[in-house]
Length: 121
Image 1 (tube, rainbow, N blue to C red):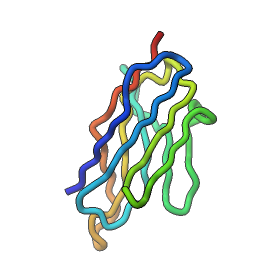
Image 2: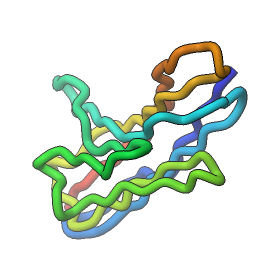
Image 3: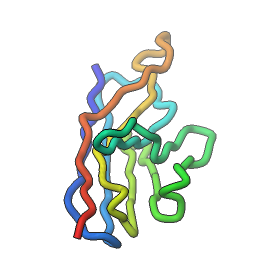
């Protein structure tokens, strides 16, 4: 069993910052990739940023230069530092972790419960 626990969402004004975190725990053999997606009301879920073993971070064009993804391998935790937030960043943010729970099981995607980020004056 794998659990993902997210934290860090909230209500902020435009231009302010937030930091999201997502910790994975449970049966984990190897984490291949970690990332963040978001879903605004009435819209499809979209990629925000990902980071994987052997590759650098990947960002959506809309957040490049404002958001930074990082990971702490020792803690199986991924972070999303969000600066210069805009009202259009308002969404539920979901953590995604692609991992292998056992050595003989292929990678599988796990999702967090989601955390609300609201940017409004």
